[in-house]
Image (cartoon, rainbow, N blue to C red):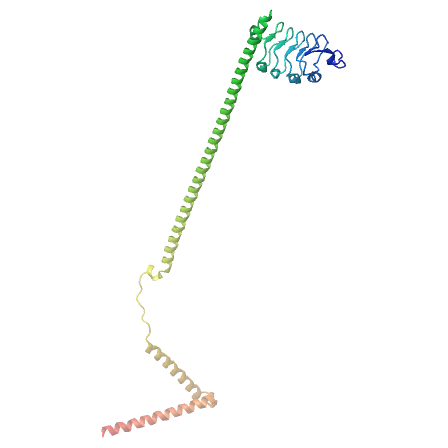
Length: 306
């Protein structure tokens, strides 16, 4: 494994039992793949290198029990650093750490911790202490774990409160939406009822107007059918001509026509016409008959006198 790149030098040459010493190798990155191939290396020394950060897959090295990262330039640890659950000894001396990831609280087997010479957050620095001897480093591990568990619990509570608040907000939104929908339904229902009532009034008004028009039409029809004399002053009744008078007039007219015909046939040149000859003959017969009737009447009158 060459310096800087971490390639070219076999890690097996650095392995001594279960200890793998990669200190003072001028490393700027961790050869995670090669380390993962050596699960027997439970003790790993990466001190005195140029490490600025650890890759996220570094947390897959769950077989590590003791880890020395002192005297590097680490500014932060991976967020899932707590996956190294078998870790018991952790040296982070002289780095550039300010805080620790919340998952650090999951390192339940951690027994030894050194955080000296880091620009730690004041609260975290006070909890970690000085770690000037073995006992203080052990106490630092216990206290830091408790502190990180408290932070984790607080974050969990905040997350729960946030989740609860989001749920309540969602419930309020749903309730507001339901109320809005119910209000809209009620508004539509009221508008529909108002529209129905308006149409009913229009229908009633049209029906009443139609009935009024029909009554008016009936009255006008009745007035039109009445006789005109009802609005005029009464006149004296006219006497109808009797049937006998009509017959008499007809007979007089016929007689007049016969006299005119006789006069024409007797006194004019028409007397030689066939029609006038017939008329004159008929006239002569009638005169003779009348004379005979008069003679018979005289005889009867004479006999009655005797």
